[in-house]
Length: 190
Image 1 (cartoon, rainbow, N blue to C red):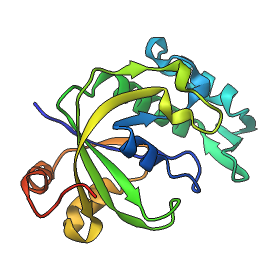
Image 2: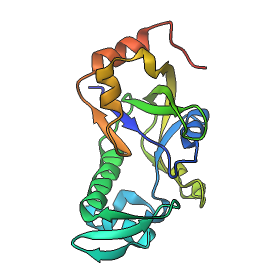
Image 3: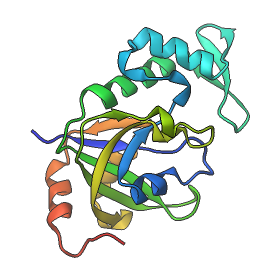
Image 4: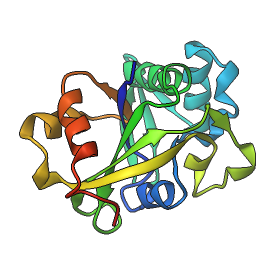
């Protein structure tokens, strides 16, 4: 059974990681400092995230972290949610699933629409592609891009489903609309 996923490939708001994934036919999840996430359980992922982000405990389950945009407060629950997203990305996606990648005009400025693709490979980890400013390359799935669709051409319901905050999540109620877009000849690849 085909499943439908949303992936946001960006580390900082000024990166165009979505374009790198689109141009090279893959989707990937960041957190390069985790190392090979395949063998890590939720607790290990959380601890490696805290270490990699140099998280400073503030008390009450809160930590100060810096993603390169200045210090922010991150809650323990947020680390756990991120760890679960990583495990789902590795364990639940399958060949044939559909990935939706938000596409931006320029360097994360304005959302233009969405790239829709089909997963064509098994999950792979490429430590050789880990670079300081391009950490999203390593943990990935290969994708054949099928469509690019402007945000104005999808229903409000689908837009809301896609725009749920977070790096990675599943869409469970708009499968028919997504399949209609995939089959619609008025949409293609730019």
